[in-house]
Amino acid sequence: MSISYLWKVKALKNTGKVVLGMEVEVIKSGTNAKPNIKEIGDALERKYGIRPLSGCSITYFDIKGVK
Image (cartoon, rainbow, N blue to C red; front, side, top):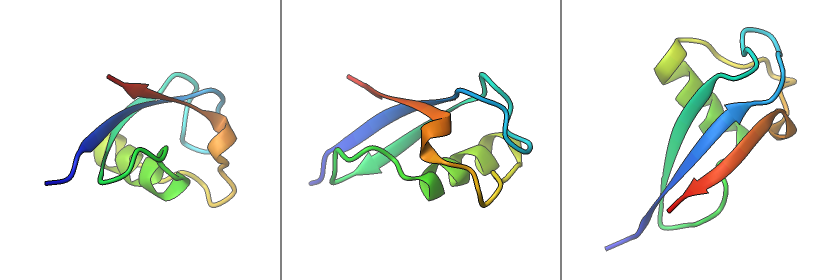
């Protein structure tokens, strides 16, 4: 049985279709590593139907673990 971790991700700046303040949740199983840009992009696509630009950086997001 692997442990799952929940991350809250919030956009810190506008970039492409990603707007300041957009929030998503990312669940990762088996690792407590922060979500990467692909995982954040997948969550944005699921919630908002958008994909971040390829130049979008992880530094554009505030990532916090939920306990």
